[in-house]
Image (cartoon, rainbow, N blue to C red; front, side, top):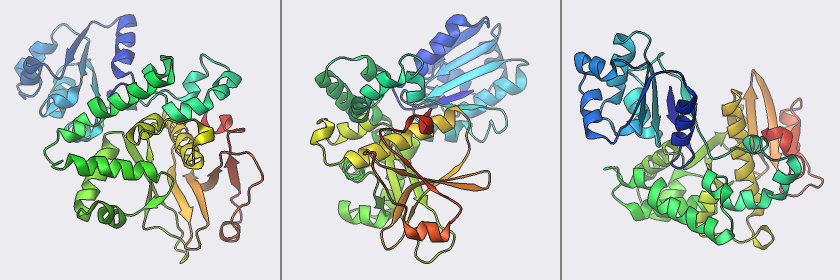
Amino acid sequence: MVVYGPRRVGKTTLINQFLSSTKLNYKLDSGDDIKVQGIVSSSNIAWIKEYCKGYDLIVLDEAQNIPEVGKGLKIMVDHIPGIKVIATGSSSFDLSSKIGEPLVGRQRILKLFPVATMELLNHFNRVEVKNHLEELLIFGSYPEVLIMEGHNSKARYLVDLVNAYLLKDILALERVRSPKVLLGLLRLLAYQIGSEASMNELANNLRMDVKTIGRYLDLLEKSFIIFSLGGFNRSLRNEVTSKRKYYFYDTGIRNAIINAFNPMDMRNDKGALWENWIMMERLKKKVYQSIFSNDFFWRTYARHEIDLIEEREGKLYAYEFKWKDKAHKTPKEWTSNYPGVPVEFITSENFFPFIV
């Protein structure tokens, strides 16, 4: 099993809780350990078998730091009957490339996110969660943030998290030669969540070439900081498909990047913040409940749009996200082109069935 996820979302805590109750005889090591790196990356079958001898389960935390870790894990599962392995990593761009090909058909992947609303409902009722909705939008749902008291403490933690942890993996990469551009790109995306962006526009704004911006966007997605949606179309001329929408895995992280922790009644980005939050909570639900879909946004050149189109089991489902619960109209272009697909409006009053 490979456990992916951003830093500080609880991967190690989850593993330790499992290990405290398992009856398996296990070995827990860190990918930061030089000796472990030497053995697992050696491709020496005898060494690796000796390393695993006497254990039912091998757990490698921060496995992305082990060179050629996929080959080492393949040797374990191919040459040690009955062995079980758990590998965790805080960034998928290293771990997936090192594990993916050698372990095709031999691995299960678990993506771990900041705490989902569906998880909060194991401890609080819906009224209590709703009473804290604005705080969730502003400060996000990292585990440590949720148990902190005081807005200043939460804001300080998130700013430190961005600077000390989340960007650490990316800035350490050899390919990132301009940290200022990377941070500038993040700020640009933070200010335009819910809006379409093209790589050409982003490159022009940051005065960088398109290939560099494309590479940075890819790294940000693979390191669980942002995710994106492409445009939906059925070959209709008036539909926009060349741009993408970018969202943050956690609204608290997004707000920390631009130092925007002011209350909802003092913000001019309420709609965009709501769209980002509800989009992410929907994603958590689909991943954790194994709901499979192709996801898009829909927009025409006349600027009519729908926030989320899900294509599931051959059917289309359309959703529009609005912070305020009031009368909303479906674009006529959508109704005429897709008459059998009604648009469901998800607001701060009716959101629970959509995300839990």
